[in-house]
Image (cartoon, rainbow, N blue to C red; front, side, top):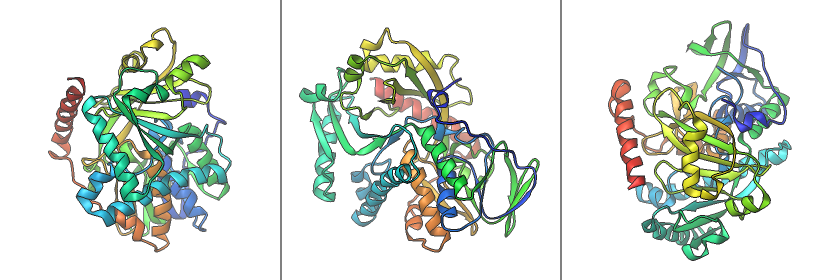
Length: 419
């Protein structure tokens, strides 16, 4: 299962397994956005940081996702104001904008080549959702002074897409998109330059104590603090937090390079795009004019036998003109969602930190999480605590029944998308 991203990395990177006893200020478990951003920001503050990764850098969702860098949080601002009031919602909005700026700053500072582009469009797949998008634009402008969002009515949709699948759209010019694996590898390179030590193929099997001793099959790290940055791959490593997320599988394809004419039909403004379905479709053009299209999920451990065919049917619902276009790559990955689609931050004990459950908003939020944890470990807890204090709930049914309950719920909403 080869992904377009892994086939087009700027450079190959590999790190040895942990086969010794190491001492560090901080041990990070997981080498995705959360882990490497945490390691980089902490190393830049003078900490000795060791990262241990069960597979390889970018093996998980950080190396397989759609590459969208959206503003705000996974939930919209009207929802956040209703749930938490204007003061908290406004702070979350500011953090969301800063998360996008953090991604942009890292790319510029470390000269990361990752096909950074600008803008995102959110489409209404039902006529009844047009009004929601129009109201969201007005709400952001009037309440937050945000002038980068524009409502695009149905009669103007040809300006942003050549498709009859949608009824209106919200154009967000402040959002961005990129090659997610090259961005991550750029962070890994920057982290190693800053002194971070990375070990691959070093699955953590246990940890305990103060300082915490983190053990792998062939080595261990003793550290004052530990950061759990495993997201959908945490499995049973930390039972205290595992029940707050649900791992699900999502699938992506990449077409052959499109002609200039087809590329202009697919994405006239060269933005990233997504729609209002509960199981969303999301897509963008790559740096070499391929359509990167994500669509469809499953809720079991295995992937479909034909991922290209599985996703292609969703692509053709949006772009029937691509029926004769060759599909060069198809791949899948595991992300973690929370019950309320807000990220789950906190501490399992005083020296064990965690951030996960990005619910499809991981490129900006997980990268920004690394900046927040660096602040928190140096004693500035306010912004980390803002995220950690958001109410979160375990999935009902415990570890045994949460999975079938979640599957039933997801299938119900998937049927609502269709009818």
